[in-house]
Image 1 (spheres, rainbow, N blue to C red):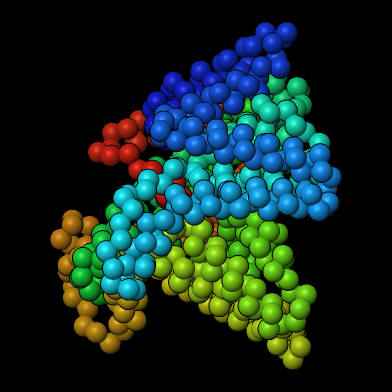
Image 2 (tube, rainbow, N blue to C red; image 1 turned 180 degrees about the vertical axis):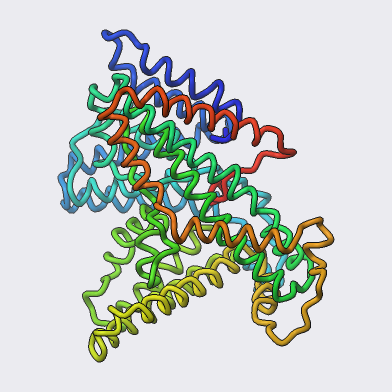
Length: 492
């Protein structure tokens, strides 16, 4: 079920909210159970055949978490249970996400014909697996105090984050689910959440879906063997750069807004990453929960920066390589991750050299502008591999982006043949770039809205009307389209 669909907006969400807040006082303990059941339905509406898999994963990790707690944090027995739990999670993820990729790679390498059948990818498996691995690791390192199964099940399946994140930590969410004060309707939270939900809906339905035809046309043509010219290649690359940003940040805004309606706070996942002046800053601001997970549970256990610069660069490269593979079972994702590992190593080495020899450079405007430009160029090149379905297609896009001396046709046939206007594509990219680079991010907007709706109850009715009208209008616009547009990160 998509957040942008009429079924979600006009049936599912109102029913879940009504039951959640209208439960009699003597039955308020059922509120978390109701959200748990509603979240399972949300998942099953999309992929009913994998509800049993999701429940099995929850029961397994809950049982292992209890064993770790009984054994005691950091005890040898707890470590054995942790290894067992994480191994089963990774085997499950590996089978469903990478079995076909592994067999296809072996067939290509050894010219064999092995076949295991098509393994369907359960939607959201990367997110609910990483969430539970973090739970087990936190339980081993710090201990776990909350063991209500209903709360744990809700922690894993909570529908605003279940499909595409953010990756959550047990300590962030369980106290909120346990706090009965969050079961009471709070107009300020509800209206602030509705406004941020509508903002995220606008990002997805208008901005991301609006520019997507330009990205799809260029990348699909490159996959089919066509060579984009300079203008087409840059329009395709930039269109995807902004489509991905507004698609995923729009989902994250909607998830945060929905949670505020239930008096629950999710961690922010974006903080204007396209303003970053270094690739390390970019990763502190892009998909922040995944970046933190990779840092805490992969980079630091590998040794982090504690074993010298050379080992640090190797650890960064390995972390990003595996982060790329997490995003998708294809060699293009591995290369994308490897590129970012290389970017990070170069960035840390360069910044260390600047700090040592010319520290005054970092305060100069020209240096910051150059750093921002180089960072964005590196990110855009990486997104080409992220979006392309093959290395050949990525090569054609990058060839077009560097074909400065090639004659440029006035018609730009790849776009013209599909009825897309080049000038409009350039305008789309310019407008979305201005929004991403110059406008306040939705985190600041949301916090400002919350402070106002909580402090000024009279403002709530006005903002509620505006948010509801905008959300309904955007859902109707989305429903008039030929096909539903899923969020990009649903595939990961």
